[in-house]
Image 1 (cartoon, one colour):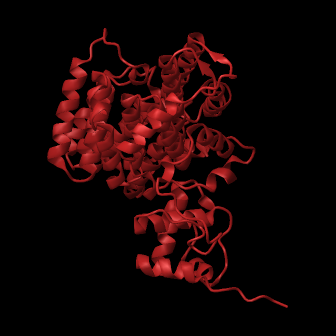
Image 2: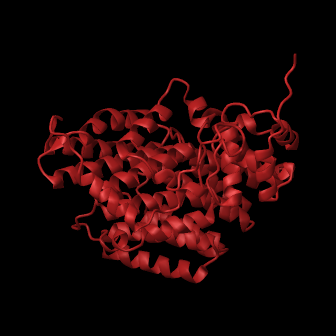
Image 3: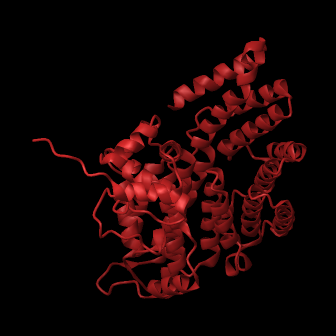
Length: 464
């Protein structure tokens, strides 16, 4: 005898609260799905939402994606249980992604990230907006206190030599990322973090200072894992590595490192067009000791991302002030300064790139072209091939928006030359933007347009 499905009144009530029609709910669902690489949901439409309200359940990661879509609309964490898709006693965690034990979070993230069927596992987790509210001061104090209580008497002794090995690994992987993109070597990075470094974190330290330094080094490696995932287009996983890195920095009582990671999370949120979240994270990155105790070079890096977040939120005056402060901070950074290794890449070319992006976002296209040119002119291209290719792509896009299509094609030709051997979601997106910008010109018989369109298409085919 056929069973009658129960109408999902919980889902219907939340859709009503969100003031969403089935069509609007479907559009929001698809956006979150594509943002997280779940392309199997690209064709979801209003009829699917109607079926879910009628009692059917979305396949695979569908419930989690719908939770995130509704959570963004309602401004709070929504669980599958609240949507009628899971146990009714599941409640949202008030601390969102910041809750739970740091080392347990590392182990859990490993199980989600490195698996035989990575695509299926990662698809079950969405980039979360409502769950990323920056924790208050009491959380930071509690995490620092928790860090001091780490270390087991029976655990293996961790020495300074172990610390130096981890630092060397971070430097090596960071150099590879800058040259070849986040698609190269990320599995090796997360394996090293979860296996060897995680063992160190559970070890016994001769001094509290050594423990803090090891937790800071692990935080930098977690940050790098997140940055590589972000660059490769794995947004949800990147977000969780960034969160883990902040927790490690908090246990190390390392305010500048926490600011550095919050800056990266703000950069990611801004690229995903979550502009208010980006500003919240960027504000936190330059708050108090995170900015005051940072080196001049790191202050400049925090400042330019803060400026981009301000410009994305239409605060031209605030963005201009932040850019000027970043210029001043970088000018004070000398070669003899004791800079943290994590900001070795941030130099004049990087400052110019981020400044250009901020100017572009507030509509100053001439200023953006000027700063992109400065970035291209001053960058050491061999060491920073990935970013150089992206900068050229952005420059060409602005030139096309100004109507200089042949000039844009020349710039894009150089960008495509530089992309050879790079595995990066951002270079892929750059090639996509090229083809979109060229679309109105395809039927005009311009040979440069045809050439760049064909080359961009070929690059995307190879990257698929």
